[in-house]
Image 1 (spheres, rainbow, N blue to C red):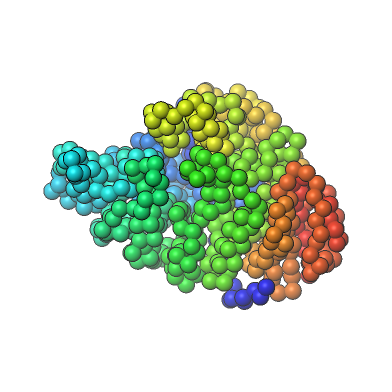
Image 2: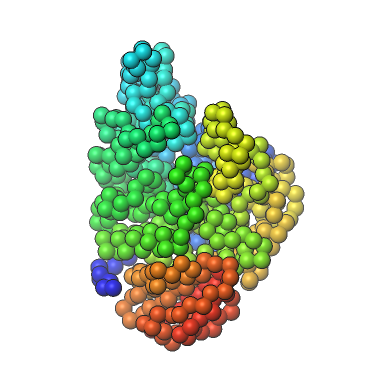
Length: 576
């Protein structure tokens, strides 16, 4: 294939690796069972020791916690269980002293219904904040029954509209009813968001992860969604708000502020599968976003009935997705945000490889290799660096905490679903529920995994005696040490491993995922096996070159024309 040569725009955030923290589950410093900012501060050396450059903290703002902090009631204050503004200042200072940057979560598609903007808006149709949110009159069926303004489905189930009897109007909430969507058509809303950004940037924040940022521009007509699920009254309406008519105008408003501070940004952009729809958001010269999270990889195992139905995927599907995004970004001067885990996704070793005890460490290292040398900025979620796995299959519904999972299960139960159907939903929750990522961080083998001196807000994973930070940080064979090597190798060979072009190798192989990076006369071949048994791989002739093994999760020294790959084997070969 011909690799299009573009001028390589260097940027600090392209060479950076990001560590994501979910505050409720990281470390409890004051014995209330909930993680907090002082707990994070106490482990800054652990984070810095991993070799990352940026810390991204999930929402820590004042919040009623209906959606674990993604429902914000005050953007300029801190949730009391997490700490205070002075604690955030100390965190920023501690990170900067260690040469790390700090990124906050910016959640501005919606607020909490307890935010004073919304409290004013719902109090009267004459409120100056009424049009800060999206209100519509009801529709009425032929029999006179009141209906929502359109058929949009909420991501947390049911209608995306909530009726307010006092005003006889509905307000839009794409998520929980306690998370009303802001009306970005109103310039005062945009000004308020810009003010929030400057407040934190002036405080020393180095950038933002922007929650569902592509949802901020809706089709003003708010039309019905096409009917794609005949079993549901409500339908996914993303076609009318995932890339709305004024999205890029709004993103450039945010980008102008970010540019003033040389700040970093990553946009979460769900429901966008065509790269041409989003290249304007991340093109280097566009001054909108540095990069975006796309969802195609983490949607691979979603079945025909949605996330909590089963689907078996093929490795060639994964290859096609990655090749599409890698190639598209490098030929259009964009940049990828690379991740397999975050606070909304299950553990990658359980989901994409194997958490069986005999191969768990090896397969976690394989996934680190697979992800760690693609083109883009690497995002590692707390515990991923330890090879943490999903919750036990023995967990019942009473152990789960997340509103998304519980709503789905309860809706099916209320609709009379059989025990067999409910058991299948629970099995899919064990594979994909957000709770898998939110179990308390296991620090050591003491009670509650060293996370808290008291019973935590959510149960710890029962395997913490074997899988914890203390047992790995000084073990050169650990998953933690392997991630250190991934980051060190990327940094040492940044020309080829950060800025090199991506080329997929052996595209039709259903067991081996191989690719190379090319920069001038330097090449790196990355080989990963997505199988728990040995596979004989015939190396394509053009890649049989003498070189140096930079990294291996076994003890491989070299390669020749035919390679016997061991279960979940991975290696990186450098060729000059």
